[in-house]
Image (cartoon, rainbow, N blue to C red; front, top):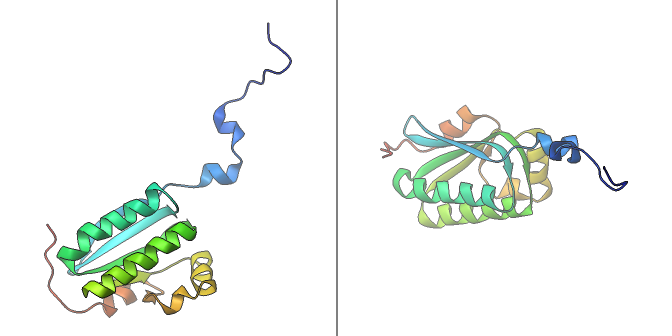
Length: 142
């Protein structure tokens, strides 16, 4: 016997479609002609996602000394994600590492423009342009 207050729905039906479509940040790391490319997809937001990106670059840059963050498949960035990108950029610059950003979608590009971070970061419209802008150092990634 069911009470009048009992509702039978699956948890997945409770979330609006927008929330179900969002993906966690996935980072794919690979060398590209001596430069490490971090291909990000999903969200760069407060918590695990922003921390994972920071940790990945923190491990890679001291060895590789240059990296490109490919933003092609990034769906959203919140203020914490922007903060992490600023900290990473400042740290890389202070340590003498090269850090470039490539191919943000229109929404991410507008966010970077609105926050004036497009004038702070080295952002390129394509991955190939970002890779071409990186110095010609030979890098070994273990």
